[in-house]
Image (cartoon, rainbow, N blue to C red; front, top):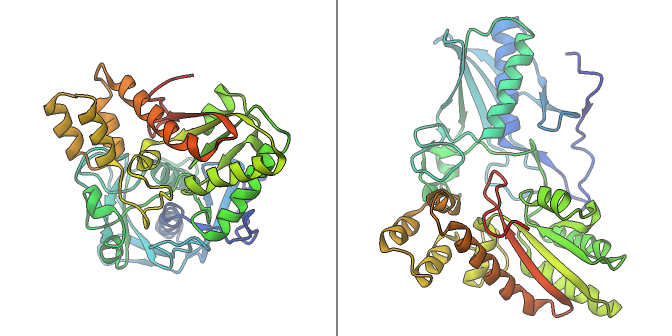
Length: 379
């Protein structure tokens, strides 16, 4: 295979800043399986590895392929082993596979093969009835099809993505609660698993916080994940080093901030905390480590606020029955009081955090939907 000379391979052998190994998402594995299957189907090539284009256009990922074969049905099946690096991951070591067939419809269709779930309830990034394959992996697979076709006409393909023992693996995840039945979800926003949910990552977060505070800035920002970063850089105009991705360790990150400020007898004007309410709203229930293995989901805490604010009983019932906080976002999206509701939650969260950082003059929380849309205050 000839790579685009303007792109570089992403080196998984290069450790993350916390000294831990990165890995491949289920989305990258599924994309690699699709590409390997198509290369046999369309070119007659049996490959032992493929290049997967990542959402970051500057990089691709070289992914080993375990097996590629033609099936009696006419489909081609390829298998890839999931490697989650040093991140604790229920799917680490699982076999992700793709069974690809020509559908003669001129379009790419995504199907759930054995071990990959089907969405049955609203509120996720994939509508009910669809295979639990998230938008970014779908985008990556479409790119893989385009690369193999290399300009040739697209007859249309059915991409059936599966996971060996996926239904059993899914029982150790939130999928049953989310209404995803039959197996795991195919996930990933960058194609790369960053080892964030480990004790060692907490130590690196402390370093990042100290660097962020090092020049005694007026403000820094915490983001549990990627949601909120654009607001930090574009709206708040914060330099990259003053935006700290804290993963699930909200309580510990506040403690590190206070300790660092105590050491220098300094103060911080504003600590921004930016992210999705699915994670941050867990603080309403007294949860300071928001990892799914250590906390439940935040819907009940959000629903309790709706009750306290006197929402109509019919709307409260809808909120209580939501299967995710993003589902609550969708339920409230067109309601007149939605912005005030999320603003109230932002202020409650800030009030909970403020006592942990007395050397911070102001804690400000901003919540965003999964697509980055601000939910409460916009500045």
